[in-house]
Length: 233
Image (cartoon, rainbow, N blue to C red):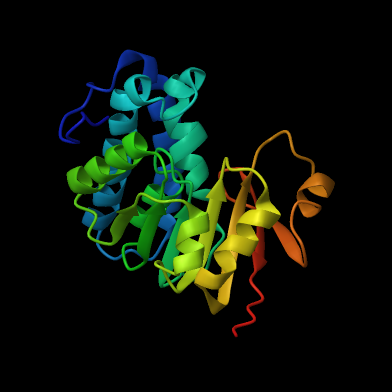
């Protein structure tokens, strides 16, 4: 089990130890099943994911990054859930926009396991955007940039993109978000909305206009995914 620097066992905070062990048991076989090359790369990815979860845990109370009750389950409820999308995506997108990134879920875990994907974390709140900047620096994520702005303004100015994928997690009014993100999308781009456990399949399919499908990741999380239908002027 890594320390906050990922180099020693046994230094994960006690309230997070059981959650981290469950996370590691789940994610190791998945990393081993992927075509990642040398084992050292798998170790590096696990270390990066671990360091990120510990960084969120360290700052969660001061910055209200996630619900206070989720602090002991950061790895399984947030880091692992973010990886559900990667587990059911055969080819990673060239670029991705994570709308309302908050603490960085799912954008940062996806950026870690998709190092060739250019990820933009869009977060309108200054303090959370500041945390994201810190996380990106601490993890040396060269494929990630943080934009502190609202989607409405970014959509109007087209100051982000075009991107190959858009992710949304824990943000409401999906049809409006899709409408705003559409001008930032490449012609073949897709969007993915992370579904909570309390949403039925029928309710999920009614959330978005047009055709959308529900996918279930290897870690149990459900994702509603669809494609944009751009009409450029």
